[in-house]
Length: 106
Image (cartoon, rainbow, N blue to C red):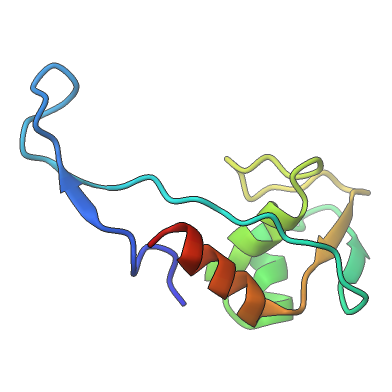
C-alpha cells in the first residue's frame, strides 16, 4: 500500500501562498498504533534508519512511516535517521494499521 495512493491532489488557488495552479497532496493523517504482544523490539545501532528497518522487517522501504508512527517519542517524523541505542517497536499487524490509515484519510 502506497501512502499517497488514496490522498487526493488539490490545486493551489491562492496566489499569495505559492504559484497558483500548482498541485499538492492534501494533508494525510497517521493512526495511533497500539502495542500488541506480537510487536518486535529492537535496539538501534549506528547506521540504522527507518527505511532500512522497514525493508528488513516488512520487505518494503516505503513502510518506514509505520515504524515512525509506532515510536512517536523516539523517532523524529521528519527524518529516517535513528539514534544508536534507541529501543524501537516494530509492529507486525500491518493489515489493521493500513485499515486505520485508510479510514483516517478517506
